[in-house]
Image 1: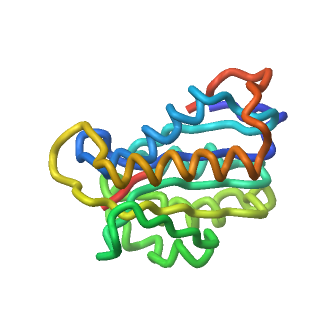
Image 2: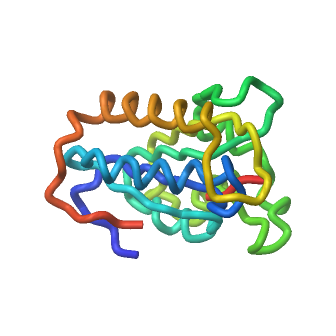
Length: 172
């Protein structure tokens, strides 16, 4: 993937579309695209491909991850974490490429990208109601996702479409 030099922010949606609420990251990216990206904001639907995420982060100043979590909190709860705090998994814990997730991509990218590592990484996690096989988000996760879309569009701009086209993580 080639980085668009106009990107100041890259929003990366992670998750498995075939596991209900675990697909919130990729669905979130589609919702952002439907609403229109502000100038300087790019998106990446990383699905469950953590390794690709690390390379896509190269040279982008601010990264925002969106993924599902299962912490036992109320379904639809939104958590905002600094990237370095959220990526506590040691790189060796990835084991193999099939279990390489966004929380492995952050320390890997730090090692790989050196001076081109993003200065600011934020992770938004939405508490899943279910990760059972299925292709539909639960009602509380759908509501939380729309709330988060509004929040990020408010932070990064009006939602007016940018001049650039749409470019391209994973959960448990």
